[in-house]
Image 1: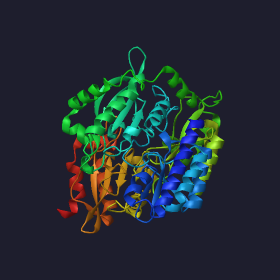
Image 2: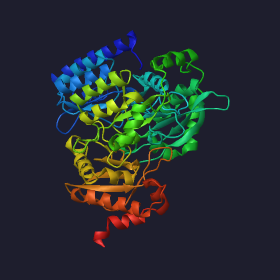
Image 3: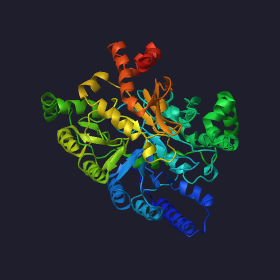
Image 4: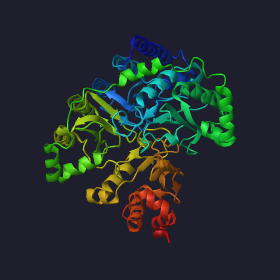
Length: 553
């Protein structure tokens, strides 16, 4: 993991002191609300339905056991004993008092954490694959490049007040895109050219929310030494020409659609002419410095498939299911990547209690070199578990509520906090998630359905990424009542697509049965090798729509 130097630590501590003073002046009525608003937002502080919400940065999803213990302690003492892991690989506290936030930030600084730029119209937390550095098919480890972007973008004076928020994601594997790069303002795909040089395919203009769009390639290969100057050129064009009069038309995706990719490319390249080869050109020594923080841990020389593992796989169907679904192949023999799921029925997806966070820290220390990852799907990951220890870890994870063997299945859903917490939400999300979890509680049925992404958002801001769920659910308001719109056919990987709304919205009481009807259409029409998304793309939306509204015919 990246470790702060003295300058990093000083900057974060100074930021805490500045915000402490700003908060106190606001509480003393010396700083108007309109002036305090952008200050608190750039320190991760929202005003939600019931209380302030503090969003804590977890850069590219990496946490040490010391850091997650601090998060557990803070949630216990300053909140209500739990936190919510978001799709942006951050942690949200839903109940801190405004007065306590400077103290929380000061404690975070003690363990090299902060809430800088987790909100506001600035460059947000850069995200990447939760299996970065350990999955066996990546081109290179993307984390040093994420750290480079983080350092460049944090406190960048020119991009502190963009037309709207700005999000960047990085992917480094050909087989999968677990960072959903094509629905980001900028998506970066690490590539190697014919000479073996590292560079980036640059995608621009993706995003969700009110006008969901898939990004478009603006550059097929940008050498890594030039990527920061090229990103700066894109941001400059957006900052100067993005719509500042209408927040619903302010994202770079709107500018890209209005001008067209060729015109955007021309304007970016014209700006880049003034930037390339100058101070933002990254020297080789800087790549070496950044890569030095992401060296391999002290792996043992091990063999795959030890007898303790193979015997348990043959003897225990429960363990075999968990192994199949919740663990992944590791680049090193004798190790496995393990996902600790936060999707137990009856618990809001992505929520973890302070006790669970402490246990996750214990697991990290005992099984994974003291490190954890947060996934885009709101789960936790132990990246380096010895295969010999998998049985022991499984038993402990079951007791902690971390071993639901449903990763990638329908009940491993993405879900925003919704109307239970968010002041922007039109409807609750968490009860919908629970209703679906309870309806699909038969593991045999879930496994028969197979891979299916279900995403739930409480409003058009799409924090639950409903647009790119194979099945998406959006909460809408109808004359003060909560209803739910269903979309189908979304995807967030290399084959990214925006789902299509099947028709009029449904009441809360109907939504579970509607999802069941849609799933039944898939089961009745699939071929042996087809996933849900494959069958939808083959047969189209009509059969699903007919089934969903059959009772009204």
